[in-house]
Image (cartoon, rainbow, N blue to C red; front, top):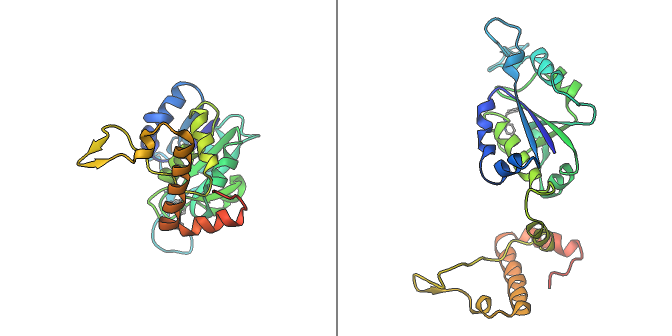
Length: 231
Ligand code: 4G0
C-alpha cells in the first residue's frame, strides 16, 4: 500500500517511524511518501497562503501551490485523493477496512482556515473527518488514517489479531491479564489459569458482553440488529 501525504509540516510524520507502522515501512509492507507543499511555492519567500477574498480572519492555502504539489506525484491515475477535514464523512472501522482495499491513497492536509475551494473541487475524491472536533491541521488526522488503514494491510499485523478482532465485531474486548498471578493482593481470574479453552472462550464472551453493556450500550444495539448472536 502506497500513501502520499501533502503537508506543510513534513517533520510531524516522524511518528510513523516508530512501533508497528515503523516496522511495516522497514519490511516494505507500506510505503509512506511525505511531500512538503512549501517546496512548490514560486514566491521568493516560499509563501503558501494568502488572505481570504471577501475578508475575514486567518489565511487560506493557495490553490496553485497545492495543485503543483499534487501534480508532482507519480502514478496518480489509480489513486484515491482524501482531504482530512472536520466537514468530512466520519471515519469508522468499516470505512477503514474499505480504504485498506485501495492500493494508493493520496492524503491532503490543510492548515489555517483551509484550502482554496477550487483546487479541492479539482483533485479531492473524498473528504474524511476523524471526529467532531477541530484541530490546528490535518496532519494528526492523516496519521490516524494511515495507522488505522495499515493495520489491515497484509503482513502488517499477524493474521491471528485481525481474525480475533473480526470474531468479536461490535463488541468491546474482554480484559487481559499477565504475570504476576497476584498483583497488590488481586488474583488473576481462576478460569484463565485452568487450561480449559472452552471455559476460557465462554468467560471471555460473557465479559465482552458485560463490558459492552456497561461502557457502550449503543454498540450492543448494533449487534442485535446485525443478527449475530454473541452467545
Ligand atoms: C480543513 C481535520 C482542514 C478545514 C482537520 C480545518 C480536524 C479534522 C482543517 C478546516 C482539521 C478532523 C474548516 C476548520 C485542519 N481539524 N476532525 N484541521 N476548517 O478530522
